[in-house]
Length: 272
Image (cartoon, rainbow, N blue to C red; front, side):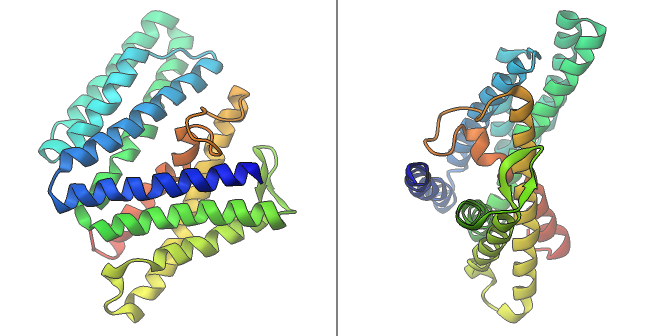
């Protein structure tokens, strides 16, 4: 119960802060403020990714990695992201060159894969936040509420009623009961979008579908990071957030769900 208390306090402090920053950024067209927030999140998550890779015996170019992440994310919001892709490709090639010179052909190949994946996994996926932010503030709120709703429902129902393990080889704590509870609250979170309340009968099936799909991918993201932590033989990626572990532990589901939400809103509904 003490762990639950830490999780609740941390969530109640961070959620309004995050949404408040994005609201101020949109309200006063201070897009750089949103850029700083997302860049800081990416930088801290990148630090934790480097820690996990170090535990796996895969040293990556720390200075390059931690410089490239905020640079890419700031460029993704500045100048409409025109230069972010150039920076991304440059970083990919520099990671490959560093890995092969430091590690040799075989080890360098695997280090290159880990470095390139880490860059795609953190800053590239995080940059989807800007696409939602530019669409409508309430779309961003809806997305966060779906992911946070899923995390909350899965944790509470899984802790109280969980009996049937989901994938015990990856995580002993995940249960099918938790998945069901998470999806229910994810759908509830999807309904909190005033931008879609006009013509609700039309949008309601899509809101339910988004809750299920985005919540499902949030769970997959959480399972993937659990797999990384199990391989690295650690319980948490960090200790930054009491009750949650590291920042990467907090945003793992968000990273996996971002492209899914954007795809649905852009290609199926045409709203972004």
